[in-house]
Length: 121
Image (tube, rainbow, N blue to C red):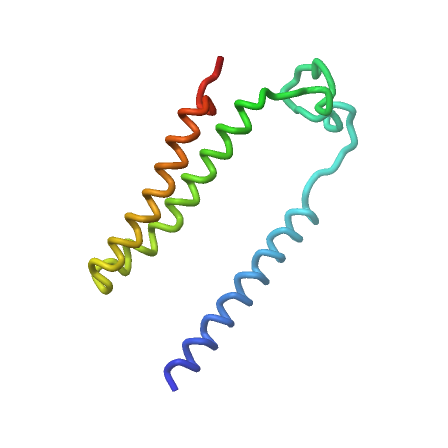
């Protein structure tokens, strides 16, 4: 019986959190001050006129490669946190699996470094 009550409590928690989210967003929309201005319609609200349109701006390919490498290692941390939680339950098997996972990522980083993906020249 405890499992059913736990499941119901989680579902109720998610529903209340979702309801509160929509209520806060709706109240913010309802009481916000809205005024159409030319400055509000430009892409950047820094007070400076944009030099060119956003579609005319190009970034070097090195930026994208670096961003992809960052995302890969950011997701790696997201996968290692659950592993760290259950490490003591599974022992050396968990250690070997995580080591293999990290080895694959380090080899990918090494390949990116050797192929020049991390250079900014």
